[in-house]
Length: 340
Image (cartoon, rainbow, N blue to C red):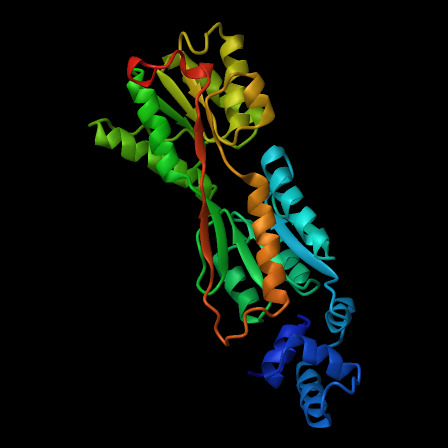
């Protein structure tokens, strides 16, 4: 490993890797702690000098057995989904004595640089959805910083926590097919988010199993206004059922239907995803997913990595898929006979 020559600051994890010790030992050695032998202190100081490492508040906190800050990166704080995930993350991190630094990337010209900068300031980092590319994740993971990926495809060597999308989306589609619906519209952009891609794949698979072609997805941002605008055009062709990528989009469809005199579910069936509180009041058939548990699990896994509970040189990355559940309400119409 060569000494750093660029402007990026070295991290305590890189010093630990160079010196062949734990991050706690690095912190103690740089503080001159008598708990560390003089030989080890010399080795750590040499590594720190080669890497031009400057101890920061995070490094000092590790030496004292507490964690100064964990980071979380996500696309946007608009809408309840990300807010719920972040709440679960923050509550759990706080229970371990950590504060949380948050970063949103949508609309930032310097998003990649901002993610890297945050990674250099925290003890562990959670990255939600595609708020950082796989190449950035790999670069940060190579420094030794504990990482957890949330609601996205795995990257080699990094813990990943997701929810079940494809299988439950297939069950949702089967429910709609049981009502006799055959002309489907999918509102959402599978290219924009791994979760949406999984939901569209599940819908497509269920339709194919019944000899039906999957509709091309109607690209749509994951907010109420975008759903309302997209639905205005879709409703003119009057499909049997609209499968929205999330509840916010579905609620936007509900508003557009009212604008155009289209009745839900008498004229068109409608489904969402997330099971937000507003979906319950709207009688929206949807899929409940454990949003806070996603964030809480990410924070707990980071705490375990930071605390050094995995001592192998190359600990196996964890992969977990949390269950989701179909929630049937009136937006699909009465239950078909076989489900009553």
